[in-house]
Length: 159
Image (cartoon, rainbow, N blue to C red; front, side):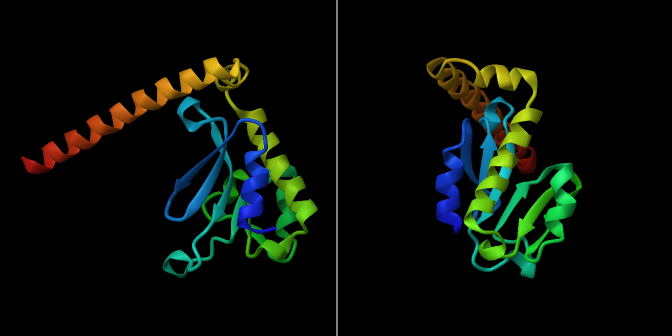
């Protein structure tokens, strides 16, 4: 497995959305974050770790049941900042075989999907056209809200 094959696999899972966040990180969400989706995997594309820290090449939701078992495996460790919610990180892609990656990433998606709020699951159950329209509207509202925040902060700095 590598970043590109993982990306291709993850985007095939139902209701998966990809964003680029926190530097060079591909973040995969179950459901769009504009409607309350939650992230379930993060692929670190940064070739040089930030500030010398080791975040690994990929992090994912393992769930309470699998977490302890996975962190015992060579090349896997508790994900920085996310271990408290049972996320695991991998030092390198070779820490698991391709079939194991697919199993673990599919499980991360399923765990996260099951934890989504009812209103988010209801949106995901809508017909695609209706769901797409609602997500676009929600993104627009959030973008306007963010722009208002930024202009308010800029105005307060000028005073």
